[in-house]
Length: 120
Image (tube, rainbow, N blue to C red; front, top):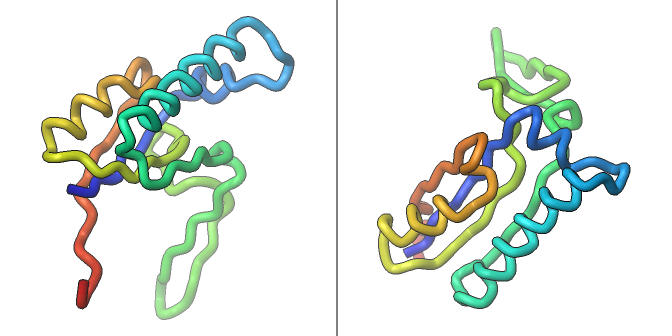
């Protein structure tokens, strides 16, 4: 069964990504690397991508018949940091993997079944 696992991170998590090579940044990336390797070893990941910070986002809404573009993320207080498409037996297995995701420590990980493609 295919699930999207969406990683939502706190401001502190995003800051921990660092660019200065500091110890905290190293721990951040070590946890993510270990998680990605575990997914790969289990042969369940079909796609995964990290995303840039909320300030790099643009949100589009249609209001009064036309598009309204807002600089920044849609909101919610957390940063949508990345996603994984995983193929696991059931929702319980997806939840077990979500609990291992580094984003679950301070933020949240949402799991959601994918819709079947029309005609598939």
